[in-house]
Image (cartoon, rainbow, N blue to C red; front, side, top):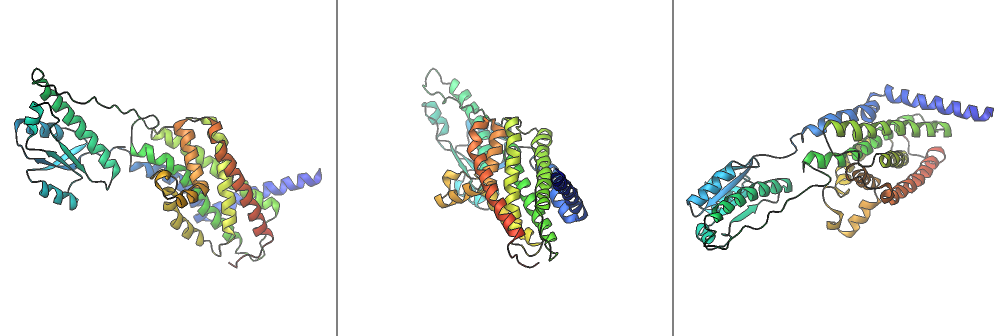
Amino acid sequence: MKYKNTRWTQFWQNYRQTFKDIVQHSSIFTTLILSVFLYSFFYPIAYQAEHAESLPIIVVDEEQSILTNTIISTVQNSPNVEVRAVTGNFAEAEQMIRTQQADGILLLPHNLSNSIHHGETGGIGLYLSAANFLKTQLIGLGLATSIENVLAAQAEKFQNISEFSPALSIHKIPLFNPLSGYGSYIFPAVAPLIIHQTILLGLCMLIATYRQSPQWRPSYAQFWAIFFSILTIGTLGCLYLFGFTFWLNDYPRGGNFWGMLIAVPIFLSCVIAMTLFLATFLDLPERAGHIVVFSSIPLFLLSGTAWPHAAMPEWMQIIANFLPSTQGIQMFIQLNQMGVPTSLIIPKLIYLAAFAAVCLCLAIWRLKYAKLPKT
């Protein structure tokens, strides 16, 4: 009993000492704790508007009639787009797109009015730059609504002599991003990666700092104290981002609260275990920054958020699904935004737990017994 009490005493002493060491090293403290608060406020600021507005387009008016003037006037009133120029030369409009003076071309053909009179659609053309899919979506939405209203009103004048009727409107109802906003889409996916990368950087720096002492070999009490201290910090960071930050910016949240509480410690355990193992290969605390700089963008791209896995090569899909960050990002989007039942994420939880167990065993072996590179 006395032996057990001694082990618990050593554990709590090391647990408290780990927090003291984190606070004493300003770079580690800033990375592990302050950076989460900074990201939570500054990252969403860029997407507060949620939607891009006044996106520039060029109108090619070949007919120059009352109908085309009405369409142009209606389009100009749309908040989504800004008519940068009106021309009768399509080649000129193409050149403006190439020089990035606009993001789209609205073509009003020379026979538009006559086509409408004969019950045809008129051949209106919409040409959009694919450089930015968000802009493409918003331009298409703004123009489609404006043109549909004008054509419907024009067709009513000839309803007795024409069989023309506009196609039925398609009403999109977003299920998991009601505002269809960019911030509501991007930040819930980035939040788990913020936790992932701050732990990766901060814990690698902490272990590398300890290893600057040539004789340092952690006891089991100190190893688990480090593990649980980082787990505490990471858990509080997740609850802060998934709770307060999502609420503050009115992002979709709370879909499966209890499932999220179960998933957080498992995901964090996997990230911490992987980081403890990676840290044994670093000879300087600064090397951790090299890993983060190199890995942040690829980890996000491989998560399947920016580009679906189905569109990636098969070998890239295998790498993506192997990464804990991919499993974590997809899992928390499912839980927080989509509200899926916990049973559906059990395969991800099992994978993360198994990954954590393997990395923990390797980290203990490396830190306690293996010959490590000199710092």
